[in-house]
Image 1 (cartoon, rainbow, N blue to C red):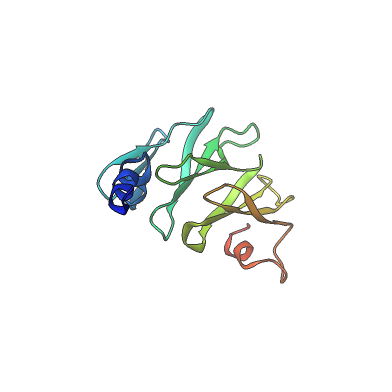
Image 2: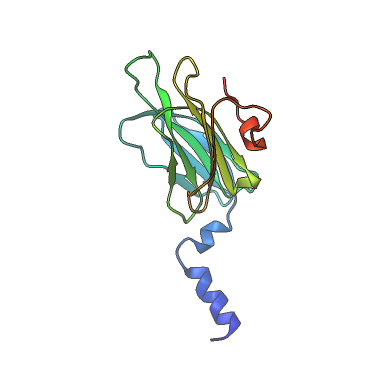
Length: 163
């Protein structure tokens, strides 16, 4: 097979063409549904999660090919929903969902969008601070930090707001 034929074949594989389109916006509708707009004007509408009541804290990574947001759920002990799931989207890839069952206090892309870091804790009191750094492509854990940040904490931990 010639190089030209191989390139032509790759161009029509599902998801390949999508990955070359940059992401321009992440909008959250009044219904809590996330809409991701690509540079060509096309849109990805994220499926609603079971028991989801809203979404918040949407971001596009520096690489413009990765987006993420928090999914909020009702909580028995507060008058407001709390974020329990971080979802990361890359065109042509399955959605990655992160969380440990605790409230997500903050999150950020790292290394231009190749990694995502997040911080979880109890809703009130800051009793169980937990930090994770994950690979966006595979979803696998890269590093974890337990407890409050200190002088030995990695830089990605300090980047997260842990109030």
